[in-house]
Every structure is written in structure tokens, then in C-alpha cells.
Length: 221
Image (cartoon, rainbow, N blue to C red):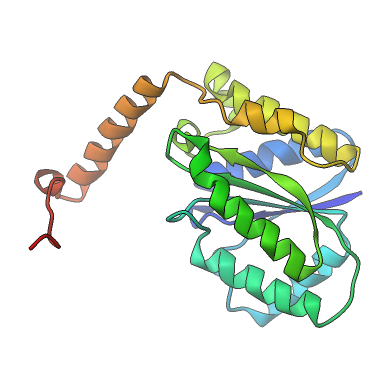
């Protein structure tokens, strides 16, 4: 079995999306599933890349997209590549691999990712994929590019969910509801997560010299 994992984060290997992809690949590799990771950002305008990725899709039993959430949707470069894939696959008949979406966000609530997963489900209908389900991962700030193996208890839920997903891939089944339930649980108390998120937000603002402007409302008349 061949599996193609598409990583949609512009942070590349320093991203939560890549940490998820790498852990999932390690699980699938241990069951002799040939699994490749392809980072997408920067390649959306390359015709050579699109030819390459379409050939990869034709040889894959599963295509899995790991992506961050951008304003209730997917990043523009991911959407552009998906549109090109859909156009190519609807204009030329081919086989129908299963497709899984994993969308992560910094929000502590997983439901913020639901719309983006729905977009991927609709994409599958247009691009001749079999929608096998999706995982909504809230609290992505817990990972922030760190290997899931190094997260201890904080990463237990996402690891467990990916293990359930890997098992479903091996059995060529849909994403189990149990995996959705597990990954939807925040790995640390919500109040603690928000406290750390606020601290990090202020640290980022200070590094950009705008700490005193966080309450600015430039568009209010």
C-alpha cells in the first residue's frame, strides 16, 4: 500500500502539520506502508510539481492532507493546489484513492476546524477521491512543530487519535469516530492553554514592537 501525505503549513518542518505528518508516517512505516510526505507551500505555481503530485496520487491508496486552519478555511496555497488537482482529475479518468483531512488550529475548541473539513469533503466529490473522513485538532499550540514523541502527556490525545487513524488506513476503512472524539479533547486544561497562548501572543507582539498596540481598533470610526 502507498500513502501520500500532503503538508500544507508554510512553516514546513517547523509546523504542527508536519509533526502530525511525521508521526503518522512512522506509524504507517512500521506496518510496511510506503508513505511519502510532500510539503506544499511555494509549489502552487509549478507545473512540474503538479505533474509530479498527480502521478503520486495515481499510485497512492490514500492521500492525507495535514493543514493549519486559516480564517475558517485552508491556506490559499493549499486551496490553489487542490483546485488544480480537482481540474486535472475531473478532466481525466483515473483511480479513486481514499482521502483524509487533518486540520489543526490554535483555538482550544476543535469545532473551529469543521468547515475546513467540509471543504475537503466537497473537494473529494469534485476530484474523484473517496472521502474517508477527517480529524479536527484544536489546541495546535501544544505542538508548535515539536515531535509528538517528545510531548509526553500533552500529546497523548493526538498520538492516540493518529494511532487509530493509522489502523483504519491499514484496514482501508474510514476514519473511526473514536479518533475524532479523542483528538477533539484538549491535551491540557483549557484555562492553562489560554494562559500560555496569551503569554506567547504578548511575547510575539513585543518582538515586533507592538506590545502597546494590542488593544488598537484602527477601523472603528
